Each structure stands twice: as C-alpha cells, then as structure tokens.
Image 1 (cartoon, rainbow, N blue to C red):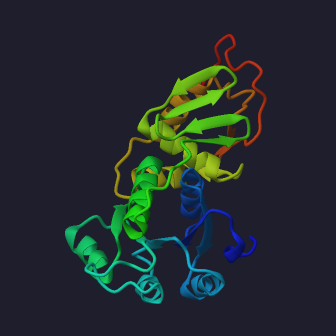
Image 2: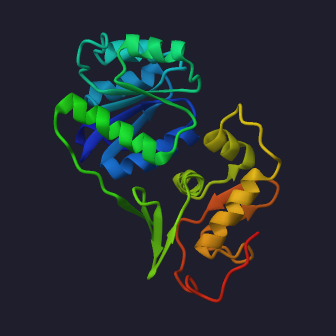
Length: 252
C-alpha cells in the first residue's frame, strides 16, 4: 500500500471491517483526490495514524472500535472543531444513533446504504468545514477505457455518452470498485438496497440488465459486466471500445 505519510493528495482513513464497503468508498473518494487507507480494527488504524494524520476519517459507527478511534483522532464534542474531520457511517438510521454519533464528535453521519455521490458530497463538506478551504473535486475518473462522471451521472466511452439513474450509477461503482472480483447478488442487495429492504427476487438482475442495455453490453461477449454463473457479476476493468455505438446489444 505504500507509506501513508508520503501519499500525494489528501489522506483519508477508513475504519470498516467489510472490504466491499472499503473498496466502494475508495473509488468514490478518488473524485475528491483522497488517497485512502483502511483499517479493520483499532490496532490497524493506530499503525496508520503513527505514519501520518489523515485529512478525513470515515468511521463505521457500528464498529466496536469506533469510539476509541474517535478519541485517538482528538474528537471531543460537537462544540469543538475536530482535529480530523470525521464522517460517520451507520446502518441504523434512527435519531438516537445519530445523536450519539454527534455527541461523540463526528462532523456528519451517513446512513448505509449510501449513493456514491452523497458520500463524496458529505466528505467534501466536512473537509471544507474543518479547513475552511473549498478544495476542488475531479468530476470524471477513468476506469479502463471508461470515463465516469459522478456529478452528471454520465459514462463515456469513445464518442458515446450514456446517462445513468441513481441506482445504475451505484451499481456501476460497486462493481467497478471490486477490480474484477465477483460481487454476489446478496452483496449487491446489501450494498445498494440494504438488509432491511424486501426485494422481489430478480431486482438485481433487472438493474444489471438495464445497465447493460445502456452500456450496449452483450452478456454473451461482455466488455463491461460479466455474469459468473451461480455466483453473481464482475466488472471487466479493461475492454475494447469496438462496437460501443454498434448494432445494438442483447442484454441478459
């Protein structure tokens, strides 16, 4: 991963014990020019803090070590500006949970599941409040030969531009963030709709199909999203633009 202190750009520390969530946060924060390092527990977070102080911390408030990490970061209460601005994450969206997080000193809290654009916006805002500096974001990032514009929900490849819905953008970011690894249907449901969502059985497949249609992705010869039989889906990090604006692909 390299030396955290030598990282170019702003440093972001994540406390979360689910790698799929960490990967999604890391890809999203690329728009904010953050170099992300993650820790699954307090000991790992302390090793990173020994290297350098982060410009932003994204902390899972449901994690057993969240309170201890906030203390290490120098957070005291909502009346004191945090030494390191903190964005809290929680699966529990009730008022009691949010008030507890603010009492512990987080600058903002985001209920999971979250959309990539909301995570980015909240991260930029808490950083701006802490520093007083309005730092720019990079609206478009490149993944393979695909450019994704998070602000306008656009995807460009070659000369073609397609517009995505909020769920389609979240789905694309989730798959892309895994770097070609398989994402199961259950993981997609959990990350995008949440564990409490009562979904019809084919909701994931329907949204994958919709995304593929917009990307003109033929499931029989996939360039963007491949089906892994019996397991789920995976993003193809590199692909050819041949046929992007072609004869019309068949979705699955």
